[in-house]
Image (cartoon, rainbow, N blue to C red):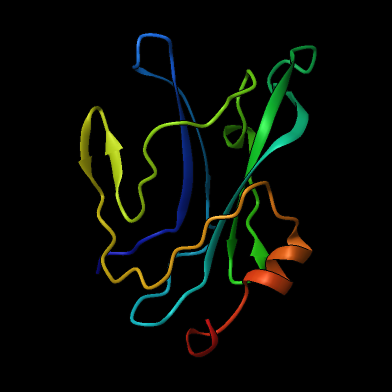
Length: 139
């Protein structure tokens, strides 16, 4: 049996237009299939934090921006791969239900995408719960 995992990712391109860095956060559990699931991705560009190298605690790096993935109302745990080593301004293509690896698009969503809503600015966990959460009947 094949299993799937929800993921929210963001990439940054360098001056040459090639992938320079990517950030991601994965859901903690295997994705439910054959049912409706509310997935919310948030990139908070203002959130900066310190990352400490676990093998050398004297090595501290500032990370800029942070990705949050909500499965239902629950913010998934994220590690050092959920931020960037430099401030990033988003631009370019927005893709949903697919991914690109080594220049090849694939990893297509095995299901239907019912609704997409985009907000300007990052939402807090409380805003996700109060303004985003809903059932398919009341969206």
